Length: 505
Image (cartoon, rainbow, N blue to C red; front, top):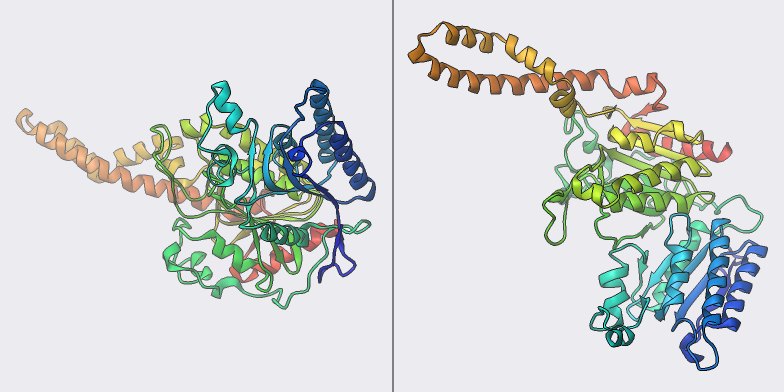
């Protein structure tokens, strides 16, 4: 199947697979599975993506056939695994109700960490392992209908297994074409074609407007200003910064927009300098949680922090772009959330997946520190993981093992206590309390406790400031953790240059 576009006048060619509801509701036995396997063979031979309009009632149930149908479903499953592990791309549109084997095919094709394809759902679509009637009859737990079991709104969108929602089949096809605009590689070419753009490479993003409901800043430049945000701790809207950096004359396509509990990572396909890139931003304002948060987790998703699902989303995005297009990360990243809830929900596993994705990534990675960069997040995005990674940092940003405030409170608490005790206000009051008659000591000790707390807060701030001053972004450049410090005016041109250098390598 071939579709002509402005970028590809000769046509975007792919292999099409379509479930047929007029044939036993698309049930699966040997002929259907052989056809699926043949389609993947054809796509692999011609280096083409597969476009699958999936509709199926699962393995065929009949009086004259049985478990052999399940074996054929498994044979097709094996071929999907082989195809995707070799870098093949399968894009799926759920065209109706899919049951049993088809949802597992969909999962192997688009939902695992290594897969590159997308899965689009419409209001008429659902993925269920067992249909509602069968669940009810067997005494299982079901919902009011199949959409409640495996539709987009309540299940597949929030869990991230469906990557896009479309209001109609026509809209789903439009999403596919937009996806190909960023990802399609003509056989024999090195990567997605570069687009023309009238957006100047050296455009200064400073004047780009920032919505006041997203923070205290009127423009992107104020976010990174020493006057307006010297400590780089004030909240701001990361999508605004991402839009400021991307080409203004090309739309962006946000992936996993409906994924619940993953809001602190934003993933977009975009153009920067005409180059197709996966653009990842770390949300830099607090995100309100849905429902009632558990007692062992945060009340809100804090800015600059990766939580389990946002870590998973980030790793999947990096893997999906590997070998196809560069990844650009705009990072205000204080680290991973370490609450009991996050640890229980596989924070270690998903955080580690980011590190593995960076190690295995084929192509340029441009990691740009725009505010803060600390802790375990530093490790999984370290330059040491991939030689084709460029790390840029905006002037005034911070990079260290731990932020100054927690370092002062925990690591250097002894130094803080020492300075507090030596302060004349505390030492003098302590001497007075020691020398005072017994009747006056209680009042003096109460005053001493109050003064000590106040002075200790000052010393905490003092040590934190010293730590941040020592572990500046300049030091990170000196030790090789960061390649270059840039101004806000240089943000867009420096990223474009880094992408082009990486593609040259």
